[in-house]
Image (cartoon, rainbow, N blue to C red; front, top):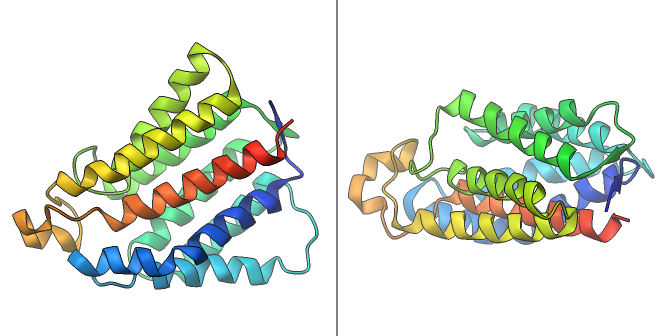
Length: 213
């Protein structure tokens, strides 16, 4: 399976719709140990991207991800704007110049996004952040590509790893961000960033499978 870069807008819009559909859930989770505005802010940024691209019938993947990243970087408040903005900008940079995306290129895109996110927030696995979702998703995807080499199957395995990583944050104590002030009281609630990261990765994977050939 390969994904035509010309399907960039469809892939980005699938992520937009997923965030819009989950905005209340993300804010509800965030409200348990945070400000409660995660879903609101995410929905704002992704919807702004949708508005900016409303008149464009098609966009290459790197173009769509670059505009999405710049929109999130400039228009979302708090820590998530820079993190997710940089996440998509790194994916766009890695995809630039490619007319199609295969499994190995997508693995590079994921790894670049992870490296940038970690360089900004210095988050490690176990800190109860989106890294607890993103890291295992990246590792699982690359491992699957190194095994079967089946792009579609690797995306399915990535989704399962992202879900497991997200759910695993429930039993962690927050070490970074506002929730870290709660100490042990942050245990028992999933991390909102890990939840939104899971939404993004799963939506992206599903759409890539749908448009792949």
